[in-house]
Image 1 (cartoon, rainbow, N blue to C red):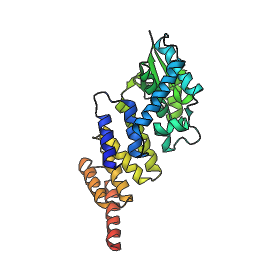
Image 2: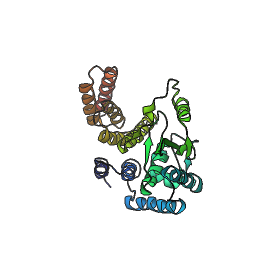
Image 3: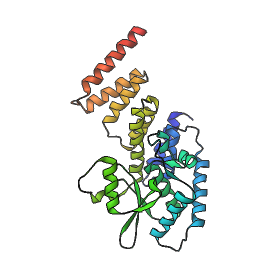
Length: 277
């Protein structure tokens, strides 16, 4: 399937009033890492997983207790778990691969839990802590939170604060707004941002470009994406694209501290190209 068609499918999935998280995750994976992914067949696998979960859970329980049983089903019975040995493998972010490997990073495991919870009509929501991602459910009096990366265990307010400190080094006061529900678009944006950082660090320029294109769909006003696309396009020897992106970046951020460095790199690469051709 052509890149343009894959991008159209992602745009159609995400540009809805209430985007479907599963479809957004599947079209993201297809557009970046798995172009031959069978969307219908993969979605059916999630349906089968939800059916198995429904048979395991006591549907007469309240939402919080049902969520606890769902966590036991996914993270004990089914064996889904956090990937700790190769955390920064970009494949850990893609849900179709998570289904096969049964290992992933916090946001991917949380997305899995949210998708199955939605199919079971458990009103769960994503919680984007700094440096970590968990899932929340509102009880009769309080919100309850579950940590899919660590076996789906319930976590307290204090444990959330500790996880933020451990993952980011932040030692200030815990901000209650960090526990607010985040949207599907915010979840997809965070997945893509993780991938952007990983692929750029690994100098996987083609994958970086694909991620940046997807990011531009969900956060079209981010100026730094023009800079990153210029750098990645330059490394891929796509000089016309690199110069166009650099021009956009310098127009939108004329006083950027890295503007001169980027311009010099572009000119040097152009000189090299002229000498070789």
